[in-house]
Length: 550
Ligand code: HAS
Ligand code: CU
Image (cartoon, rainbow, N blue to C red; front, top):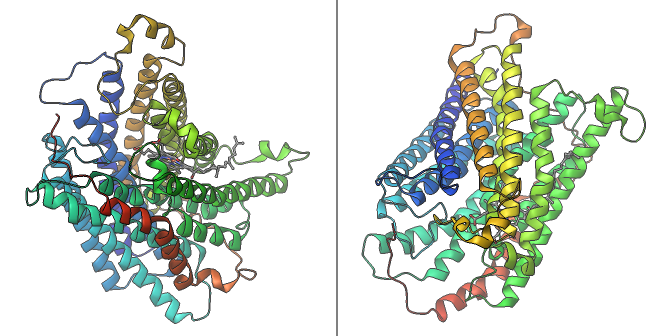
């Protein structure tokens, strides 16, 4: 068991994550009913306000706090106990993050920031909303650097050795995050805050969006990589096999550092003001960043096959039935992975320049991110929650609780299947996203489009409701494991941290050469962004004043 200081820190992070999860999923429930025209909101509550709360609290706040809980737990477990300084700085970071979260949430709930989680200019929120976001990012940096310091101490004490795989992956993810945040920090500090507080009159819209997506794309890998960490180090342990290839795992993470940042234009393919050359260039780099995900899929299949055969599976696919399906820690992560097959394929569709013209700004994209961050990432975090909270609190995770956990992931699966399938198809039929107006049903020809079993806003609402029930079940499990389940007494009752052994004997040392990778990452960023950003400033049209449309 890891130290009491780390356990408390991790549990607080999980607590904030699930508080955000509660408000965020509630906002999601309202969302599908409004789109279904089944609900009219009271005057003080606005569609865009709820959509902002849903996006910010789930995609940003829930994920980030949970990720740091996982990092703290795993770093302490794999690299050793935190010193008092590391612990203190982690707490400082946590408090700054929390302060930023509270400020931004208050602004959203009081109706002063209905600008969605992408906060596109020229929509203009209260300046305090941007201050909240900035504080949040600064907090993550403080926690991130504290973890880096902990890692450096280990490196000094173990010169010439490769660090444990968990630590390597944590540091890779933090490196990616810190480089990515430079974009959002730049636009928030130098563009949004002066503009929102009225110190300047106008904003360069295209530049602000570009700096946002410089951050916004790697942001999705900041969510994904901790899930991949679980797939690489937790899954093999549960399966009873060693990590498939330590070198492959590390190389995949290196590729993410290199290629996940210079690709933000794939969110801006339909925007004017960026020349086609640079859009195509970043589309090519986007296709590069698919490779480490395919490598991950390959390793996962290798894990399953090795484990299944070890347990007596025969023939080409016989191993499949021999996997530990009765263990919710495994099944949850497996379903998460399975969702990522269509999720990733949809991403490839989005990134294909011409196809993007069809799906951009439709419900298809909403479907896409619910089967990327909304299931592969979120359900992996659920699967981690089942053992991580009992591990941290020393409470039991009973058979009954495991049954509930199965119902929870089962309902999430069904809800997501219904909702995201409907969203994808509706999107292809032209249903827009990010709009309060979706009442196409009052147009006679639209009736036929949206009347299929899956091509229906009702299906989406049914899916959304099942998801909400699932979320409440999860919160019940969280509260039980945190406060109410009986304490473990006997040795076998203690829940363990499943961390697989990783053989580093064949791993090249240069994979842990940070200077090299960070250097190449910055070179790629310069190549992909320097000229188009320069042009955006050079040829900027007159800046835009702000609009408060809600
Ligand atoms: Fe995306 C939009 C392209 C991955 C999230 N994406 C979004 C938005 C979000 C998001 C939130 O190019 C909306 C942003 C907004 O508000 O406007 N995305 C991609 C590409 C990938 C990708 C190329 N996205 C993600 C991940 C996300 C995420 C991951 C969150 C965590 N995305 C786009 C594009 C847009 C976009 C455009 C803009 C659309 C527009 O027009 O606005 C790739 O990284 C995907 C690579 C993944 C794979 C899958 C590998 C499969 C694995 C599982 C193996 C399974 C096993 C189980 C072993 C190629 C690793 C076996 C089980 C069995 C049953 C057999
Ligand atoms: Cu992207």
